[in-house]
Length: 380
Length: 186
Image (cartoon, rainbow over all chains, first blue to last red; front, top):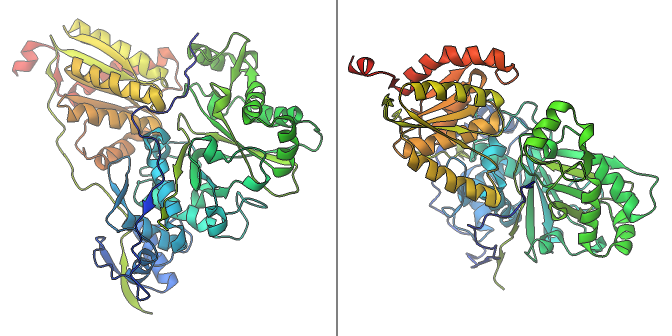
């Protein structure tokens, strides 16, 4: 038997935090005169512009802010990047420049100070191991979620408490929307044309941009555990959120068993006969995290526990599906099929309100692998 | 109402190769490579069926199966596929029968076509337009795409094989291939 293990591509360098050179142009702002994008004449009132944008196929159906040259210049002037810098090459080899990121961020209503977070997020999903090629095209409802670590959570107001996965009033939704617009307008993810998503997902409007509540976590921050300390963003292609409610458990193992067993259902991505391996992400609320952390101060023990219970006995699969899993050598000697190849592939972070009671699970898409990137900062 | 200028938020690659690439020509003596995947049993059945016909026409046939495309397994796949393309004369690449698998089918087809190989991508009807769209965005709008009926994989083997039989001739046309010398001389 040979289980396919998840190992990152050996062809990429380790992420190194980038320090930007200040391009402060003084109180008058920079005269950025090398914007290369095509100009379109348009009515600039909200209704007319949004009709125009819908006709052009630029939007997601919600109101957009017109990306006038003035707005784009002001956004750039508040940052330390040149607009022609190529941040990533998209699956079709189109270039995602700072200029394109800024135009889409303006349309989404994202604040100028979020540019470095958005850039790091784009760099993360453009990493070949994220498999954006498949994420963009698939029939699945996958969209990227981003977990932010470091002081930047506070500086940008990234939510990590009540309603952090959606619904709290904050600017993280606009940052997520900017990323989604870039995926549409630059990476070419247009439903029915270059994307075959059968149902789509509400998360395809603004994705998820959440922080980890590091101050309430008994474990090291997610980014640090993945080898990058300080301000980081971790991307994970998710099919959506799965809520787990548990008002009965008392112990670490009980909470983790309930959570993991709830993730292991026959039709989930990780058990698909189409994929040889998959990761999982699990958000644990701060109340449970405290209880679990007392019994399991080593995160590896938490992952091991989740992994052990995140499995199904092969006999519970229908015969045809069991045959597929058998062909893939996914049924182990104990007769079970596990969500992920190894405990380390069960990714855990802490967030959520102090009401506790719930965990949230995230199944990934196909073999898309999560990526952690540093968020650049200005020297000094 | 005020009028002004807004900046275009979209980006596309600007180059395109609209050529379908070379015809496969006379198949006798050539090495034909099938690109398979881990998804579609119907494509396994049809490729086995077509392979037998290629062998009868004097061609050699090999198969390569795509697997996970991320992490070190993705690296391994890339290396294996490059070596596979080096070893064949004609590429038959499938199956474009879902979103991501159409993406990867077209991407692997473009890699083969850009290597100069006569190449045909095989798609099911529901994904035909999508395959052409992805090929154009990938800089190869003229990519040859042969279209099988949809749905396909939902059918049983005994239902799929007659479809493969009926499509062998049209697929040869798509790839610009001929089976015998007399036909090649026409």
